[in-house]
Image (cartoon, rainbow, N blue to C red; front, side):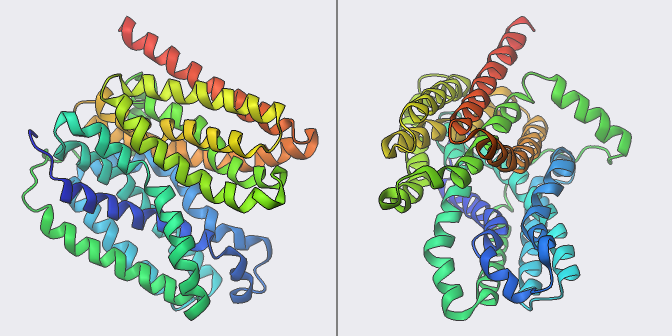
Amino acid sequence: MQTTSWGLVLALWGAGLGAAAQYGKFSATFDQLPNIYPDAGASLGFIVSIVGLLGIFFGVAAGLMVARIRYRRALLWALWVGAAISLFQAFLPSLPWMLASRALEGLSHLAVVVAAPTLIAQICAPKDRGLALTLWGTFFGVAFTILAWGGLPLVAWKGIPALLTAHAIYMAAFALLLGARLKALTVDQPAPPLSLSKILRDHVEIYRSPWISAPAIGWLFYTFCFVSILTVLPAYIAGESRAFVMGAMPLVSIASSMTLGVAMLRHVSAITVILTGFVGSCLSMGWLWLDPGAPMACLALAGTMGLIQGASFAAVPQLNHSPETQAKANGAVAQMGNVGNTLGTPAMAITAGSLGYAGLPVLAGCAFVLGGCAHVVLARRRRRA
């Protein structure tokens, strides 16, 4: 592409907001779910986590599947299925049916987060890819902010079914919009049908390749820290500034990604931006170790993590030039992101519980160091190849 269709980029980003809300609609209202399922007990947590668990097992498979069935078709299928599922959930079915619907919703979510950034990379001029994919990288933070500011008041007014119905309408609207906008987009012919042996071979290919796997490996360490820090850190921030700091951190992360991150991407590679983010995040954790819960240290951490966030998606087309390898890389990012999100919070909580506050900056700092080292090693492998 020589010119970028920014209207279509924004439409694809809007679809990503709907995919993020597939997580957020129950995360934001989790405290109200016991009123709906009073006998669920500990299994209630699966309403949120089952989407992520499926991502661990099927993230790469989703990337391989999307690469073979055409990106437009996969995205539209995922949006329509997501709309139908949210509408079904608005009737508040019994817990087994709700869990089954969440499992299917996890597959819809994976298809969106693999197909949409792959399409964005295809429709952007090379000079605009960094900005467009950095914008894409904000979809989770923006969606959760919208849910907090708009979704929760809607729930307080009309209940959880109103939020689920609104999400269904949103997904259907973007399916209609993108169905019309993507008709003229040319994509590669689908590859041969999948088989279990082919999926296993492609897993090996992806994680042996220092080009395809690099964004996902760094993303593993980022996601291990991001949600877990936002979950565990608040208890150690002074009460009078806690609400402001925790509300500002995701916004500072997004702002850093869209300003400093985009500016850096015009002059240096995405991997360099990611490494800068890991180094800055490690230094910020050192600051938090010396000055526990310091508000400015928390905001500095959010800003440096924002560099990792946006540049990780920009690295996918920089390192992988065909739509098929980009889809594989995005699938691996989805898989490693779910691994990090699933392991990070319990590991951080256990560490802080056994070692006290000092365990939090030490564990997170080590994760940031490992993430940076992994990128350095993979970069050396690419140079040698």
